[in-house]
Length: 149
Image (cartoon, rainbow, N blue to C red; front, side, top):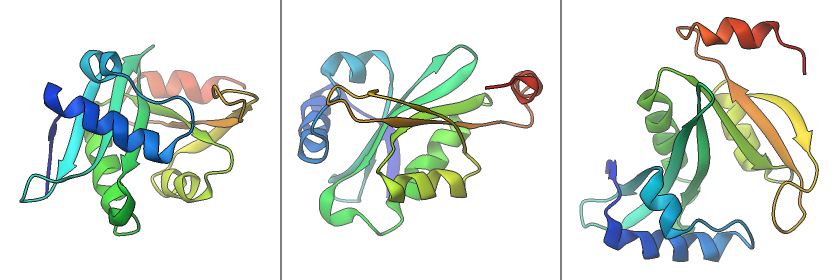
């Protein structure tokens, strides 16, 4: 297994993979091009999953993470999430569908905390949970700890 930067000719594959899983808020070629886009592939070049992140207000934001169908449930999301967490020494943030219990549990197992619920966050009207993981080595973390939400 290898996690590497996505190549532009792979963007349509990532978009197609997302459209099979999500019914709204599908990534675009512009998202792939403008943000940090990584893929997990096997020794044969098959894309098992991907994630996209970007820097926003002194935090690294996980825009999307996805493991392709038959590869789910095998721990590959852990590999991608761990890779994402090592890319920046910033605090990490994300939104997750309020009904995606598997993903919520995964994020909480990596010390993400639920900050608040955002009603109608997704294009299809579904709610999201905003989650945050503080990097203890980041001076910004102390500022966030003192904030009230």
